[in-house]
Length: 174
Image (cartoon, rainbow, N blue to C red; front, side):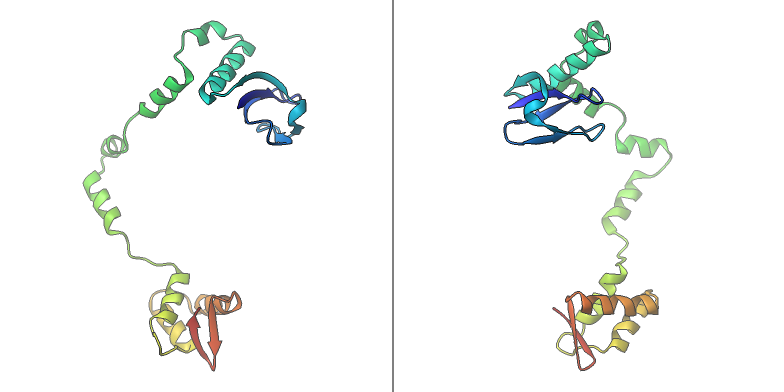
């Protein structure tokens, strides 16, 4: 069940989904917490679309726009129209003078760049059964653009968080 309810502090109306299940509800505008049993219900329905339409009609009436609201299509239809309005991404990019095919191709290829964390993990994992030393892990990461200090901190963080282990100066991922 859906109910159109209102806040007694800021007069906002919103949809409450199955008000029988929750003991409290929070106003989406002002944040006031209400007991659901004490909230004024302006409309109740089993149909979400009907509740949305009722809320829209109540808001139009509240703002003196009932006549204009009567001339507008159902809110569900307005949502569909809004989704189809405007220009597509392709039209927008072409209008800005960009080559959309090149952009799509670059996106498909990706940059291949990895995060610092991923590079440190890769440095530990790449050795397989030969567990690398801290020097080897840091050197691998530094060769791929990770600052030395950052690589050392990331390695330490992986061990402290339990994602990697160090034994005898050698590391492995868990």
